[in-house]
Amino acid sequence: MSTSDAGDGTGLRERRRRRTMEAIIDAALALFEERGYDAVPVEEIAAAAEVSPRTFYRHFPAKEDVLVLDPRTEAAVRAALAEERPGETDAGFVARTLIAALTARRPDRARRGYQLIQTTPALQARAFQLVWRDQEAIVQALLARRPAGPDAELRARVVTVAVGDAVRVGLAAWVQAGQPGPVQEYCERALATLRDALTEPTR
Image (cartoon, rainbow, N blue to C red):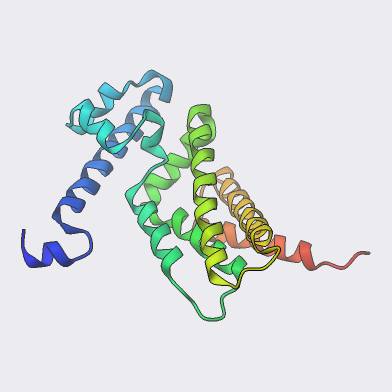
């Protein structure tokens, strides 16, 4: 391995891992769209991606993970959580992190994957588990951003869940509309609606 490979932050081994994962994801998407999620076993996905079932499970713990785990998304979340922007609100931090995750995938793969998730209960259940995992990471990042107080954790969880749900409503609206334009535009509209609702005076 060259010096640049060892020091570029990913390395040759990591790039190979990502290429293998992406080949598996693309093979699974094509098979799921052709025959349906439940009709496609892991062995067929592995064969289509030209890897062994053992290699599949080394990258994805279960079949449902193939469409909800993505190396680009995980890297985007880590980068967003680590980035500090002076003057950024907690709600802005949460929104930026979640939108970074949504937009990290290749647009064509994201559209196809979200459509399958919406119509497949097993994928929905696994996606929900990962949402809670990511929300917990965001909560901990929020708590590290400001001095501790009696309601710090409550505040962090309320902000994370409220903003997260608004972003997911925007994502669902984007899918339902046929994915016209960037997904972040729909998420920003949903977030603006939330902000308006919270500041709208009583009539």
